[in-house]
Length: 304
Image (cartoon, rainbow, N blue to C red):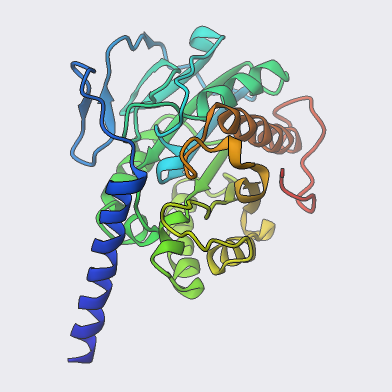
């Protein structure tokens, strides 16, 4: 009886959070884009104007970035951006590559994102000659959905597809806003994150995982504060000895103007995210002998 009551309560909370997300946070779907198509998980799989490109062979000078999470790592940004480097920066999805540009395949929605400028920053700074961007992101979802819930097959599919061709130079975990709104316990958040990392490291034992501090979405939680339980859990998960590193603290990095709707990235937020993560990834690649920038210092503070 007690277990059933807990399950029912949890379901009600999830339903309530989903309604808030859809009514106040999620951008309205575009009605003018013809021929956009999504797969069974809700990931964008076809979009007008996309230019197919040859997938580059991975070398020491190829940066492969795999980004996982909810809306702020997906196609919910305010500005649609395109790479300035043509086929040197590509979006990998389902075994094929396209010249990178918003929206990216592998995430839901059809707006802007911060990964394309991240790829450009890696080229501009000399950290890489080619960049491969892969994303697995669905907006408004708690970490449990990725760990052992309805999005586990999606994440497993993305890992297998990317793993057949590439080993990531960096994996970015950028998620947490929904869990703060749902009052997920730090213990449960850590357990689910560990489950996800175990699956990633089974495929790529030496790929570094960067965990963002990402909890701020005011339409979900108006009384947000920086020292909240999910942000604290994310900081406690950093453990370089097991390949988990401090990522970008977007809660601290972004000012109000960097969010277009008090939650998702405005263009300035997209650019700040790109520059901050490019610096972290470049240093990690240097530490592994993949670029000429200064070596990565695991004890350094994350970009803010």
